[in-house]
Image 1 (cartoon, helix red, strand yellow):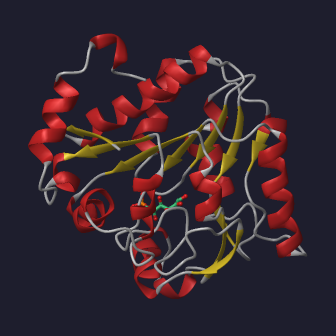
Image 2 (tube, protein in one colour; image 1 turned 90 degrees about the vertical axis):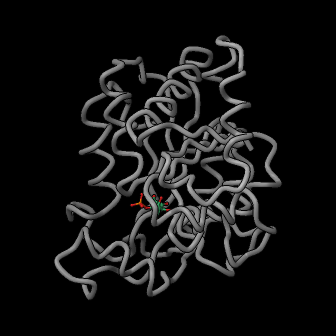
Length: 257
Ligand code: F6R
């Protein structure tokens, strides 16, 4: 894991945006996995400002709530169009977001996995992390080999996400999420985490034992993971000085790769 600690979340988001810019420059038809939630918004804003050519890029989103009408403002479909897709030249036919209203959800999940494979696999997957260590919506005790499927949110995630709804009762309990096995097949994972409420999950992910109790810890087994943190999310890392020393010593040409 490469741990990149920046003074604030905007600087950490800028690092993430530059990594994606580098990927699209090197591979204009890259396949990019995307996340929603508060964390990636500033990185998406930066990517919009960079005015990149997304015309050949294919995207796959991590997850979607089940049962909200597609045009509901809190679906991840609405989120992605509002925060990124409406502002870049992406081909709508190349955008993939799980359909939380699919009639046959297991069949839809299998088709989603097949679409990822048919696209050649994911070059870079953007991830946030839940305060309980979830990636995608793979909540604690999820199978570390899981594939795209239906999951039930924990009470903690429902409470964490209630800020987007008028009350916790309105937060859907069920979601479709890429599995941990799916995420582990991405060629690179780029995880962003900001704020002190992520500090425990981040410390566990980077320095703790691998356990389904903190699903993000499985990323220790992945050969290419970049973790962009602000100081608050990094504050419980015991080896923070080492990570800073490594990043500061990187040659300039290697920085955004
Ligand atoms: C979102 C997703 C989730 C979020 C996580 C953190 O697509 O897969 O894992 O990344 O819940 O959410 P925020 O960024 O709102 O703290």
